[in-house]
Image (cartoon, rainbow, N blue to C red; front, side, top):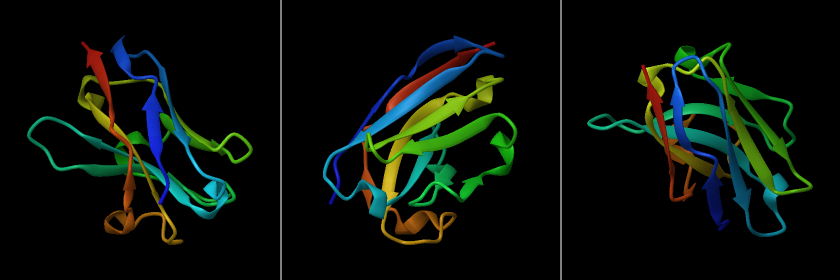
Length: 123
């Protein structure tokens, strides 16, 4: 198990940027595939972006391609989500997640979760 703590959420105007961080506990951070999910009111939680253990491979859902970037610093046991050109439809609670599997896009395999951080984009 790994403990995950998100930070960096807030209120931003449409077109703006935010950077989320997720700090992980433990000494085996580089053995986890990491991801960011989001859940908007009344909607299911969705996988947004993911990154492989060594940071070489990434996945982005279509709605965020070209706007969101996931990265990680294994020395700091931290994963980041850089969000640019934000839209009101990006408003959601964003969750950091981790798993040992290699299939970045398989959402049901993620079994470690943070508490979430609210991102609100105003129009």
